[in-house]
Length: 459
Image (cartoon, rainbow, N blue to C red; front, side, top):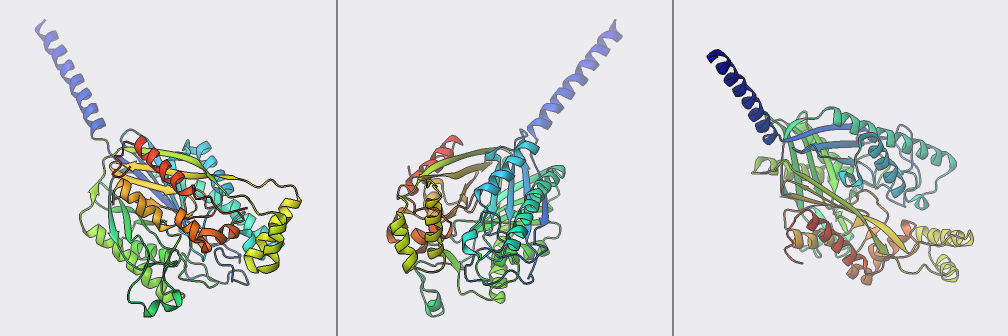
């Protein structure tokens, strides 16, 4: 009998130990992550996106273009994926197609996917992206269509590879700083060398997310900056300053994948510009800013992930009448004239012009690190105002999920100019935004942040 009692006691001890060990392992479960990348440099000469002044397709490359995917998973098993690309922007049709594909293949919902574009003006044109800006012949349209289809498959492939490479990691965050961004609305470019003081708001923050294995080796560096990738304006493929920054970081951190995300750089340029040495210089400055963050104290993030996504209906002004459009076409040139003529053609074909647009707003929270992702080309004022509400540590991305137009503030809409008015024409929008755009976006951000438990500093 004593032997039976001893045996039962021993078995009970083993079972209790296993249960405690299992509970302890669960409590100690941390982040997991996987990362993958693919070259997306076109194999054929294609028309380049961003500038209307180019007169011919691409001719050579300075360095490769990349798409990169970072999948993260928290202690509960919830996942999200950050996709970064060396592209000028991504239209809704392609973004929807890719995100639908990722939902079917990997069960990622809209809220779990951030698709960011660097806004390099030395990348390829995509289907449905600013086609009216470029004199595309049938050969170019066919090549662009083929490239776009291949690109969609490449994104699916790198997400699959990232998922297959998941491993335990630590994730930390912090903001650095560098100051080459200049507010282009408030400073004259051809006088910039003589200026001793710069005017207008800028966001000099360099948000950094470090993903390292349990031995401390860096696997991925996701970093951003709010500034147009328009230092280069030639005919050679490149990721512009952001491309050089990624190359520098991957060289100084062997085995790491560097992912650049664009911030609210709609009214920000790197100045002076228009040379390869300057692009390398700014890329080097940005890489050094990231390294300064890595050398300092970073915030370790609790393995808890929250994601939220919505599309807020933004209102547009009334489209011009055909008579008004004909008057614009007779007085203007370039993309404004093309826009007016295309609008007349669309009206004659019976098209009913949109009065609202479904604008994507996204919120992530990794531990206590908040991240906001906005669509379109938001001006820097949005990042500045969001940080007043959600705190200075906030990471803000623009150019995410759908780049349909510039996103000006109400003040910039009243001032006019490219960001406030004529940029809508470059994107083929039927009219400019109503001033209600700014409160609509800010209120949606507050709503999503509140759902994630964020306390608002200035309601």
